[in-house]
Length: 317
Image (cartoon, rainbow, N blue to C red; front, side, top):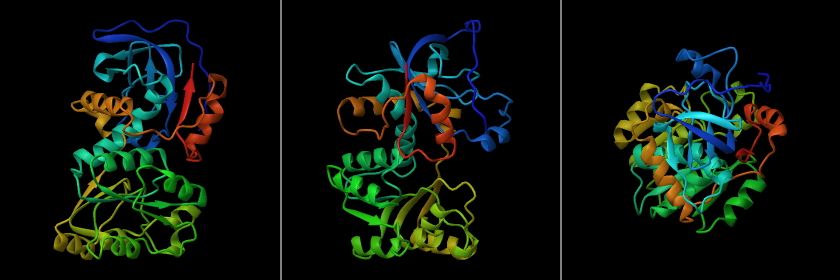
């Protein structure tokens, strides 16, 4: 995929309920071209940058938007906007939207996180994982997390309040299921937020990072009775023995589609308002890289599209 700057002289005509926003910051996110193709939104030129913050209002551009957030002024439908608290800066506002709504959807809508529950957040040092950990802790849950490298492990160990246990899977020798069962006294965890799972045997996996992912059988093993498994693995296939194990535990599997809440904006405004209020109150802090100038946007987006960015990339105007 090639990224280019495209000059535009004038904004398109304003439609009913459109709001003109002067953009102050825009976060960069991976573009799922396969999903866009499946829902008939794929085009020759795809706009880049949909999580924006700007003067007076802040919001996220819808999946079918022809507007790019990487411009000085953009038109956004009022349904996709929410007021930014004064204490939240432009970069934090734009950089929190996507990961924050994903985490809130996973914990509150799909799994009903509550005090006393144990939550396993895979790859907790990622932008999504960082917010998920803090939101779960705020709700009184005990959090376990995995780390893919020494730097991630050290970052997670510095979080306050502290994570109950950091499982370092970087050498591929630590059994995640065994560690979780040990931490919970054999009861298993109540909620699992995965960062992908290993679908096949080790010899079938080629990418190095996929070698560090847990197998689906590990996730099922470490789930407790009545547990919730929230997965981002779109190609997850459960065999009859897998389903039987989940049935015996009364457990559930839910799919966390990054875009589904954006396709239906019924809860979106409420979630955005709640998240920015929590951000303003200091309940959580996002995992952001240093603000990036607009002229470096192409290079930064290439890094994001290759899944090589460990922190959320935000363009500042």
